[in-house]
Length: 289
Ligand code: ATR
Image (cartoon, rainbow, N blue to C red):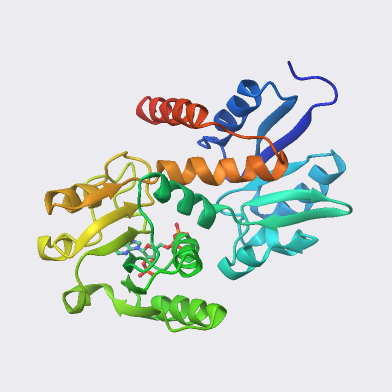
């Protein structure tokens, strides 16, 4: 039961109606018998500052921030965590005296998700497809966890360059290189750990992958598609057809939420059994859309 003293958290986005976060967070609250409620809040693009001040005044303990407000929200915060600053986006706010501190739980969420599938980027030759917002969290995660090398393949070469340079500078080593997407034939290594970070293949435009050539997929040993709907993307199918292991993006979504939940509820543990239940609930919701 939610009492008058309940901890209130929520998510802001525009639109927010499709968000799976309320289901996920309210389930954890119930399963752990916490006096905790999580609400969806649609916030217009020009109302983010007002929304943050309003949420603070209303006593919200934590807020998730989703598309398209992840950058915009940064100017309305008291403090920003180093990882979030490096990634250039905030997806989780934690209440402090006088305002909120911004975090980004995507990189750590992705790391926990892949480690759960037995995928450790440490010492690996990695490649990424895409250089947009989602790619920044992936690149940060790979740098933080000691990838041996990273090639960013992107349609617009400039964006890949900028991301590579920014991350190399932040970490003080030249781990990341940029390459035009069409130059994938020039990739020097084999057995890559690959990350698909573009929205290509995402519902409802399923059945597409950023690269279709089977020769490319022969170079991939393990791959992660950060797209979570459909559960198996065309990219994942191509990886598997070439003999590689492919993992979808649902666990990244789940673990970025768990890390936010842990920031708001220090010391509270989400069990593996609860993660399994949430995975099942989310899969059902996505299938019944
Ligand atoms: P997000 O924040 O979800 O990452 P984004 O910032 O718009 O979204 O970035 C989308 C990424 O997908 C970009 O790397 C984009 O490539 P460009 O930089 O060349 O635009 C990539 N992308 C989108 N559609 C693509 C397509 N059809 N083929 C290849 N890459 C594509």
